Image (cartoon, rainbow, N blue to C red; front, top):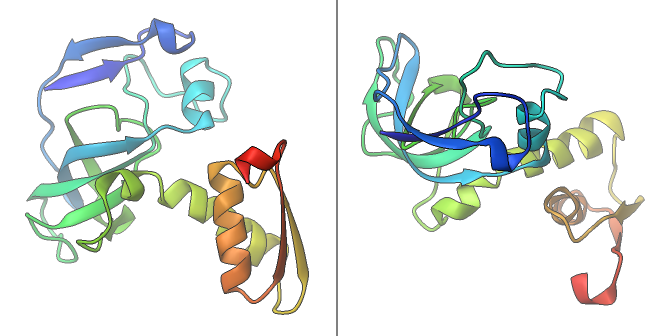
Length: 177
C-alpha cells in the first residue's frame, strides 16, 4: 500500500510517498480501507516535532480518517467488515489502509460523504469539549465565536445553536461568513 511518511522533522515538503505493508488488525482493532483523511493543524505540528507527542519515525501523519472496515481483530463486536466508519488515530491516517482501536471508530450514516466524516471528529469533538466541558454553555446564554469561518469555529456555531445559545459568529471578513 502507499503511505505518506515523515522521515525527519520538517514541513509538508519533507513528506514522502512510500510503499508499506498492509497492516493486520490486532485484538480490539479494525482495519479500514481509507477513503478520506482529515488534515488538521496538529498534523503540521507533529511532523515538525512541535506537538505534545512525537511518534517514532518513520510515521504517517493523519489523525482522523473515514472509510470502510475490511477486517476486524479478535474481540471486536461493535464494527463489522463492510461498515462505513470514521476514526480517530492520533497519527497514521495518510495511508491506503490503517488499523484503529474499534472503540475509537464511529459508524457513519450512508448519507454522510467520506470527506465530511474524515473532517468531523476532531473539529466537532474540539468544539463540543470547549462548549460543554470547559465553558458549561447553557441554553439562552450568548456565545461569541471568533474565527467562525474555520472548521472548529463552524462546528462551534452549529453546536452552540443546537445547545440553545444565542450565537454571534465573527470572522476576518464578511466573505468568510
